Image (cartoon, rainbow, N blue to C red; front, top):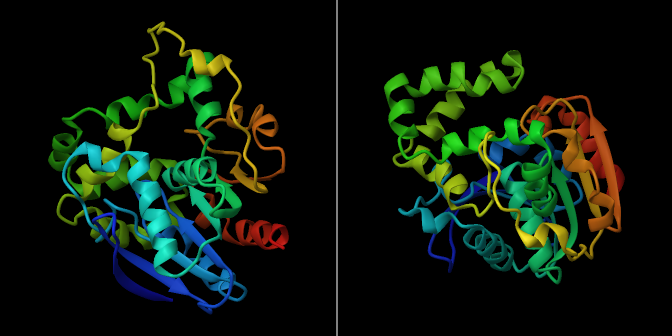
Length: 291
């Protein structure tokens, strides 16, 4: 695996891990919060046997560019980074894989640019329509998503700074995964989070999102689009789901087949961070599904 710095015409420079034969079919792996290309550390060497693997540290994360301002983290900006990165390597069409926020961007890219995305693989990331609908209609999911409201609070960085990144890791992040698996990775996370501007940049992904997360005691007006037809995806889609995810509940899989005609769902006994909680199961599911 090689890590290189790539300037993009979107105005950012990304650190990008690559592996495999550049002439092979491309597969792009997008990580989510609060991680980096290392989300895929177990999958990269296996996928590189058959594909050219491209795994960026997305804007705002690790040592990639961190432009100031919430407006620089809207999904259209990160989708543009993705397409520019693929074009940098001369890949007009590719398989796209995304986890968490990387999955959100993958859904968006597939919906808006089906000409570029040949096949789509989603790992514990909700379809935007299903997610927004669940935040209005499913109170358990709304409750599980209240952390997004907290992340949008402009004072949260002060809270994290006051407690220290190490304590934040130990008391907040570590509660959402197996401590035994996280312990060896602690230094890598703290190194990435401690880069100048990193915490604000990572949180800006939540602040820039148009997703509405109502408060638990709120009865907001229901957007009309939630009761209107939503365009289906055109490409084959594999959804890998860690069934123990406490932030994204099983309701995210309900009704998905109506939005994704060519859909396969693989459920894995794991939490939210399934790519490294159960790496062999994830890699096998991907290999078995790819042509």
